Length: 369
Image (cartoon, rainbow, N blue to C red):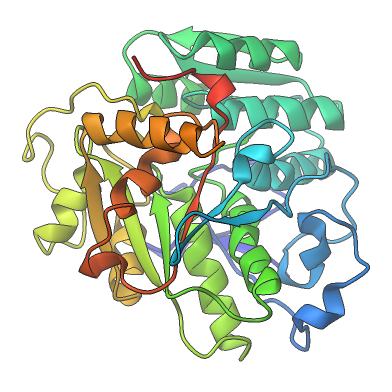
C-alpha cells in the first residue's frame, strides 16, 4: 500500500489522511512508491497525449482529472542546449504537472475545501484543477504578487487571500488554515504527489529522446519541486534499467536569493544559519525567491548525488536572457528564463548536452523593466 513517510524520523501515515506534514517534526512527507517494470518508449505510442500516459510510473491510477497537461515541445536553442516549453501548459506554467496530481488526490479524499500558497503559478494551477474537479479552493499569495497571476486565480473561482509580509508569511498563513478539520493542503512543497507529477518532465524527455537523457538538466530552484521531481525520475529510470547513467543536475538560483547555492558551495548538508549569507534582496525571479526551502537537505543531496552544481544569476543577466529569448520567439516570464541566463554563456559546468525548462509564460508577469 502506498503510504507517506517522513525522511527525517521515519514517521508514517496513510495517504487517505489529510495530515499534510509529519506530526512529529512538521517536515514534508515523502511517498513509498515503486514504478512498474517492463515499459519502454515504444510501448507508449497511442496512449493519451498527457502526462497520464506514464501511468505505470505514477502513484495514482485511473484518473478522472486532466486538462491535457504535459507532452510539451523540446526545441533547440544552440548546438548543445535545448529548451522544453513547459509554459505551453493549460495554465501557462510547469506547475500543472504537480497540480493535476494534487487535485486528483483531493477529489478522491473529498475534503471540505482545498488550500494552497504560492507566489502565483502553483496557486493558479491548483485553482484551475480544483475548478475542473469541482472542489472549493482558497489560495494564499504574498501582497504584491503579479496582478496577472491573481486575476487568473480568481478567474478559476478560487478565493484569494493576499498576505502581508512576503513568501514566508504567506506559507505560515496557509499552513495554519491547513491544520483546520476537513482541509486538504495542496502544497507543492510538503505533498510528495506534486513531485511525482513534476517528474514527468524527465519521463517526457526520455521518451522524446528515444530512451535516453541529456548530459545535464538545468533547473530553476526555489522550493525545488522541479529539481526533486527530476531527481526522482532519473533515479527511477536508472533503477529500472531504462538509462545507463543519470544526468547532472544544474540547480539555478537568482543571485539575490540564493540560500541553497550558498549552502552547497560552503559544503553544508543543510541551509546555513539564517542571515549567514546576508539579507535576501528583491529579484525579478519571484518564483524562486524562497529564503528557507523546507526540502533544502533533499535538494542539496540530490545535486551532489548527480555530480551537479549550483549556479546563480544576477538581475541584469535575467533581464538580458528574457530579451534574448523573446528575440528568438519565446515569450517567457522572468523566473522561467533563469536557466537560460545561467547556461547560455557555456562553461565547464554546462558541458555536453543540456536541457533547460521555459516554465512560465511571459503573459503572467510581462517583460522586465
